[in-house]
Image (tube, rainbow, N blue to C red; front, side, top):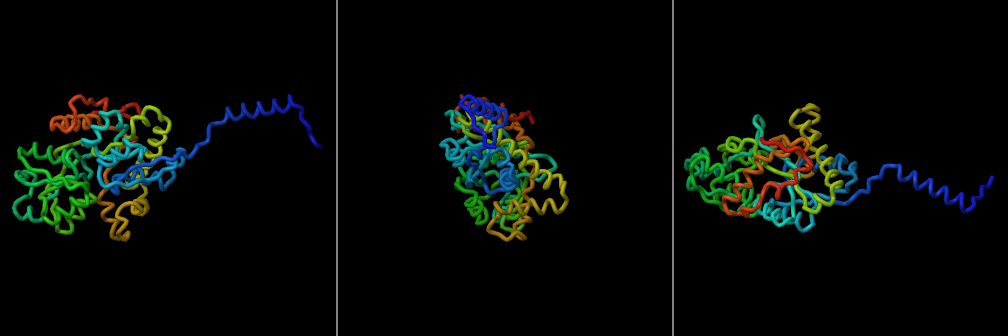
Length: 340
């Protein structure tokens, strides 16, 4: 039977439909965002969240954009070319925070006792000449990407602890630092284990110490975004942290807790290989990826004691303004913070 509606009935049905729509939770809009990363195992939280759909589940359509150093990533966040990123705290990042451009909103990778962390390396030439421990770093040349980078911070803290002085050589990119170390153009460097161990295994460099012995609890990398996203895009920012956090949890479960046994490790290595050591076949890349296993911060918890120490070091070196406060750098409203 045909049904004809008068104007009042039609409006009534439209009103009912509108009320029903209002009562229904909003459907994710697949908001397009760009996430910055390095091709390091320690950035696996983002890789897993993309590959296993955790960002998509949070309503985010994520494009990964890769960098070769921390400084340009911070600039990209400030300019709006990248929305969220994971990287080490640098002088450039702090200066951009001072200008109101960016905010640290969480933690990603920390040094932890009992789990392999960043290694201190010596070139083969320097090692043969007597550089067999960090105590012999006096008068040596330490590699870094840029002044005010995490490499600059780590090297300086080690030298201070050992009571020695050394010089720093900026080489802009991690690949250039590796080349300089292998060829003996620099004497020493520090880097995450998935890079350090294969280099040492080749015989071109030697592991002479651990950063954890000098910086226990070091907040190696942080999660950060633009100040605008932190203040004006709170739901999007929380959604990003939710998706990223699920990726981190999967990574830790597979690689640290071994919850899925050998099959779980292999599946995770397969996933990471899509982004890390992509120029090598899986069988050659897998040992390096496994060597890079370090626990990532569950829930993006942030060690503010370590962040504070880093800020104070940058200020003591006149690399950033003494007026910058921890609150200028960090928006602590998103994740749990702790003094570690």
